[in-house]
Every structure is written in C-alpha cells, then in structure tokens.
Amino acid sequence: MTYTKYSASGNDFVIFHSFVEKDFTEDAIKLCNRTEGIGADGFVAVLPCDGADFKWQFRNSDGSDAAMCGNATRAVAHYAYNNNLAPAHMKFLTEAGLIESKVDGNIVETQMTEPKIIKEPFEQEGFTWFLIDTGVPHLVALTDDLNNYDHDLCAKMRYEHNANVNFAKVENTPSGKIIKVRTYERGVEGETLACGTGMVACFLRALDLGLVEEKTFVYPKSGEELTISKINGKVYFKGAVKKVFTATI
Ligand SMILES: N[C@@H](CCC[C@H](N)C(=O)O)C(=O)O
Image (cartoon, rainbow, N blue to C red; front, top):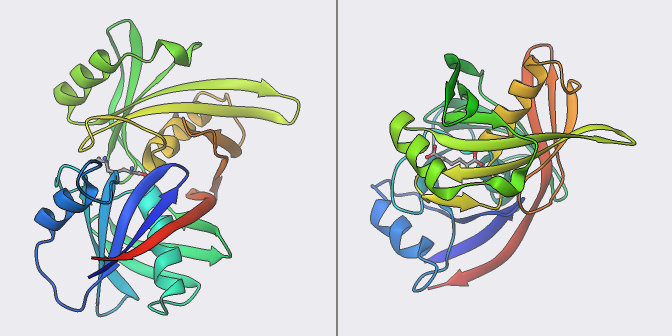
C-alpha cells in the first residue's frame, strides 16, 4: 500500500486512497504509531462517493473516530487534487457534513462547518470556558500566559466535557490583533502542534468578545501562520500544507 504523510500547520496525517471501503481503524493505529509506524496525529482514507468528489474516513492516532478535522481537510484536499482525485475547488463528505476546499499551490482554504455553541461560558479551575462545536467539540479559555499550559488540567477538562481543550492568547502587533493557541487534542491525548477546529473555536470566542477582526492571523504551537475569516456568517480556514513523503509499505 502507498501512504503519504502530510503536515498541515504541524498537525500531521497519514493519507491514502482506496476504492474498497472497510473500517480502517486498525490501519490508523498502526500507521500513526510514532515508534513503529509512520507517525501522525491522524489518519485519512479517501474513498469514492456519489454526489461529492470523494468522502473520507478520519481516525485520530488512537483509532477513535472524529466527525471533522480542520487541518486534515486542508491536507486531504491537497492530496486529492495532486492525485487527480478531485478538481482544485472540491467538495467532499465528512461525518460533519459536506466540506468545500480550494487548493492553490501549497495553500489550501476550507470552508468550515457551521459552528454551534454547546454551552454558555462557565467557570472552572480558575478559567472562564467557552464550549463550542466547530465540527468537533472544543473548550476555549483565554489566557495572558500560554506558558502556563497545564497537561493535567487539560486532560481533566477533556474527559469531563468530552472535548478538545484550547488556551488562546490575543496579542497586539503593528499589523493588528493576532491569536496564539495551544491545543490538547482528544484521540491524541496530548498537545499537538496545531488543531484547525481548535484555532477556529478560539477565533470565534475572541471575535464574539470583540477582541479581533473578522479576518485574523492565528498561530498554533508550531508557529505557522493561518488565516481565519468570517464572511457573511461563513468561516474560512486557510494556510499552507506540506507533503512530507510518500512511502510504499
Ligand atoms: N486536529 C483536528 C481535530 C481532530 C479531531 C479531534 N482530535 C477530536 O477527536 O475531536 C483539527 O485540525 O481540527
């Protein structure tokens, strides 16, 4: 089988396509293993689909299912276009619904799913939390110091609320307000270098509080730059992706 490893702002994925549909959970666990496999945060199987350019089966590195993954949508769009599986402006089916992505060289933009607030802001562990579904559930807390990221606190919040956990810091720069984000991801059970749906959740929280503009640069732990915009109520997530290698195993 031939697999391609991608990095989308530091969130890494093993991607392959198949014309045969099955449950790829075991493959995902083996291939995402960082010691004995290719190593990745997530796995995507690209599969044929009536009514869309393709559909995907997404798994986190521990094999758990997730309805959506913002960074993987950008990586898979680049993969599908470059393997002649889809045009540059494509539509594909995820468990969270139909996703539209546009590929322009190594820059890929995805129109995200409609966000849904799960719970009004609440206090816990000394932070004010905001719980929103941006394709998958995310907790967001604003902080002044991202160095205070606390793994055990994130793990506690993750299990209690069955959500990914984000800390976000809004900073002033000469070119405007930016957001820096750190995310603990479900299914990886630790911090990843980036999480697309998490960055979108942080952007929406900051926008809601009037702290940022409708088009904002967002920086995950990897330090890569992403642009998130809200235009006519729709949310767009844009940035570079990198094909790391292709391997036949
Ligand atoms: N890294 C992803 C989110 C992947 C799913 C998440 N770990 C979950 O299980 O909810 C992104 O870029 O959005």
